[in-house]
Length: 155
Image 1 (cartoon, rainbow, N blue to C red):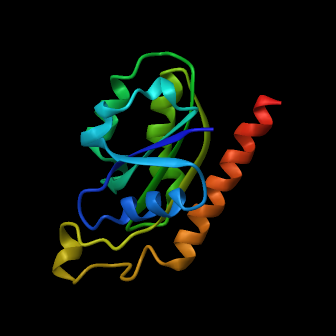
Image 2 (tube, rainbow, N blue to C red):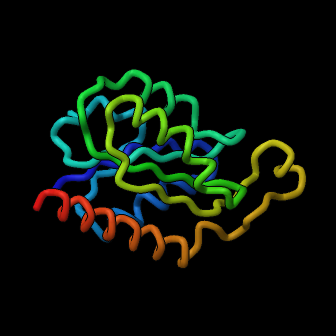
Image 3 (spheres, rainbow, N blue to C red):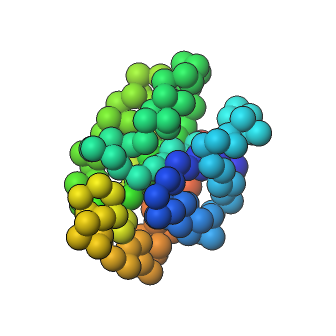
C-alpha cells in the first residue's frame, strides 16, 4: 500500500509535524502542496490532505488544489491542526468537497496546534507546546487504523 500526504503548513509547521508522525507508523510519502506536481496521485492507494485551519477552513491553496482534481474514484483522508478543538467541523468542508469529486474519505483527524495567527500573536499564541507527544501518538494510531480499514475494504 502506498500513501501520499499533501500538506500545506504555513505558519508553525504544526500540520507538517503531524504528517511526519504519521510517516513513522505507515508507508507514507509526505510532500508540500507546492511540490505535489512531482508525484502522480494515481500511483498512490490513498491520498491525505492536510493543513492548518484558517477562519474555519483548510488553507485556500489546498482547497483550490482539491477543486482542480478530476472526478476519478480515489481513497483519501483529511487532517488538520488548529487553535480550536472543533476538528469535525473544521474538516467537514474539505471532506464534502472531496466527496463531490468522487473521492472516498476513509477518515478525518484533527489536533490542536500552536496558534500565533492574527490576534493570538498579540497574546503570545495559544496551545503552546502543541502538537505534542499525545497528538503525535494519536496521529500514528489514526494512520494505522486508516491503513487497516483500507486493507479490509480490499478483502
